[in-house]
Figure 1 (spheres, rainbow, N blue to C red):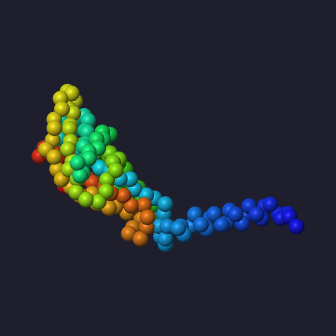
Figure 2: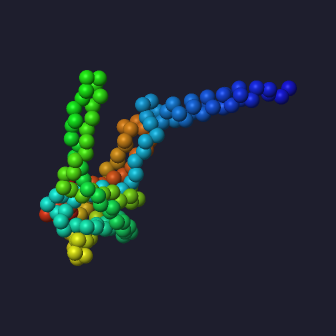
Figure 3: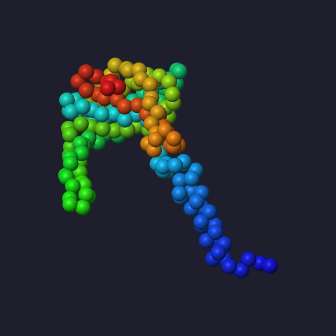
Length: 164
């Protein structure tokens, strides 16, 4: 005998999808589907912003190098706006004089050498002294959840490029 309640079939199928995917079952307790991207974040300190209009990175490991441009934008700091009587809190972003950017790059565990070239507003390029660093594993949902990535954080200031 044929199945005569198509709405029931849809309800059962939809419920199965909800349980399998929407409730976090494949991600573990307390996990979400948020992930992270392999790459390098860069902050150009306020004391160095005038000399930097563009930044190119070269990441080298085991004789192989990959280049990437860092898309720089104005850095901000969060300013607390307080909370209302209902416990709803707010904050705003205020420029802090820095430039920040992220370059998605295929990173893995192990040490890499990072070379950078800064281009000033006048078009002049400056090759920065290379630094060595090891990418950190980041897990935005916690150690028990998937979605990990390898990331590095760099700072460019008056002393040069560093991992501070």
